[in-house]
Length: 179
Image 1 (cartoon, rainbow, N blue to C red):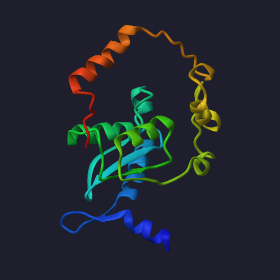
Image 2 (image 1 turned 60 degrees about the horizontal axis):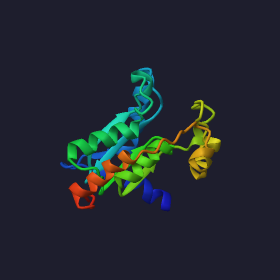
Image 3 (image 1 turned 135 degrees about the vertical axis):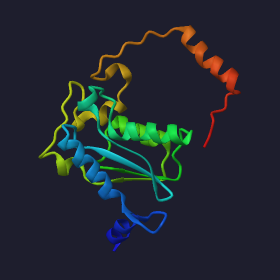
Image 4 (image 1 turned 45 degrees about the horizontal axis):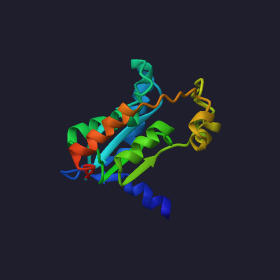
């Protein structure tokens, strides 16, 4: 019963009565990307029954390791809407997000994120392997102190770096713009 409710939530009436299955749209976007030589990931962002942005993963095509579907679609949606907050949005993604995309999803604050497969389910067909990036231990890295992580990080703290933050605080009264 709960599964049926979730499934029906994925089908939304568009203006004019047309029914759109945003989950199917996400899958098709990823499928087309694979056929064109890209990676099997996609993202569709919906607000009030309308797609405001969508993107496949373009890492292979652009050689940009940040060109994940979620990042590209979030950038596009925020630029189009003139905000960094996607409150009111439902974001459809092909799989549970990587740490970079998860951080971006938290940061843009959508109402809901719908993922259509899990890493465990697709691992037989697709594995992402990087020098410092292994899903089995990556999330554990976040709980470590910066100087205990596998990625070599070097602290070079400078007082003038803090001046940038002080100046921002001064110009903005210490308040962040909110949605």
